[in-house]
Length: 140
Image (tube, rainbow, N blue to C red; front, side):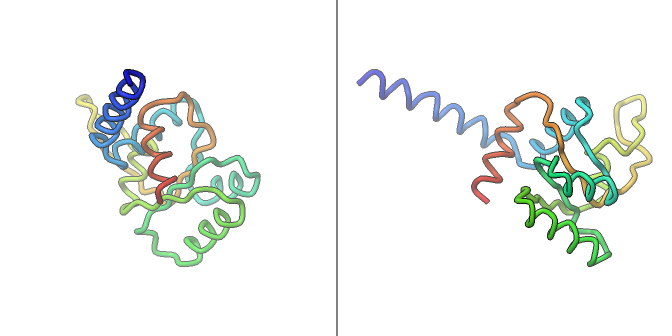
């Protein structure tokens, strides 16, 4: 009986920690870690190359992209190669998360460039944020 009780406690603790982290916060942390480990591709040209070579683990596409062919291309490549696709609202936010900005003295983002699509080729290290993103994609 004590073994069953011991199993319940960590599961509840893990669920509480995962619930406290939003998917967008987790995604931001995963992108930062991937950028540190040189595992990001940004922009349609780099991303299509990575998707064609099947080097990508996760693709993040902005909903604010105006060109419909751009969106169709990325969605088709992800579907063809079985790569997870995650959509976010703004290209400016995605650009900031992917490191396409200057940081001021306080660490706030300035001069943010928009980025329509980002691919993660290397997650870097395992983290709680990565677990949250993987769980989100599995349930999606």
